Image (cartoon, rainbow, N blue to C red; front, side, top):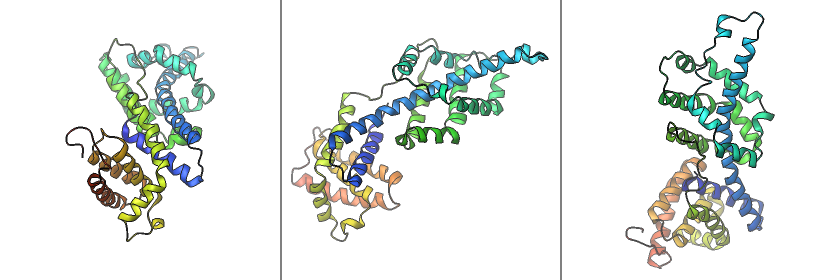
Length: 312
């Protein structure tokens, strides 16, 4: 499921796009933001589905080898350990996976089967695949460990696959690392004999509401927050402050004022961490300094009111 940090990243990107385009249609932009988050679930399912499609292709190759005129002993009695992998079979038999694919018409691997072949070829060349096939042990834990390695070592770092995902949906560029982690967590949690079920997109309704509220309240208070920031940065002209830094500070201010259950220090730390990935080398120090000044003033002026002990 999407976590609060990645929600903040998605909101940051939407606020940036809206301000850069000078577009004031907040309803349309909010819909696009929600759509881009929803599409993350497509990416999550496509990665799980790819495991199944690779297994299917391996099965087809074995079936064709048996029909060779000059079939070898290995062709006639192939190692089927991969074809019988219990975790991949659980995904293949999952009603929730199949239902989501049908409902959302995810035909990516039917229409772009070359990527399935690329992944299978890389898998069959890998040492851990050969080791897995030659292991006498036949257990669910071994199957699960292999699938996790398969995803982490072959699928997740595959550059051609990454380029395909980025071309298919531009917003997936920043979602890929998060979704990869999500897939590994889903695989790791699966237990033997339990029906495989897709994870949830949002943890709860609060997280879903957090997306809209953070986006709308930041955009609507953009000009007001800019004045507050200018007052706290007298030695900086507004146009000298990185655009992303300004947006992250404004988003943090929105959290200070509107989200009573989020501790002030948690908000500051979250935006410092986001800035390390998306802004300049020194942005984290700048953002920390500005938000520290703003939070102290807002507390004194009662603009920050938090619920519960220790939230300031």
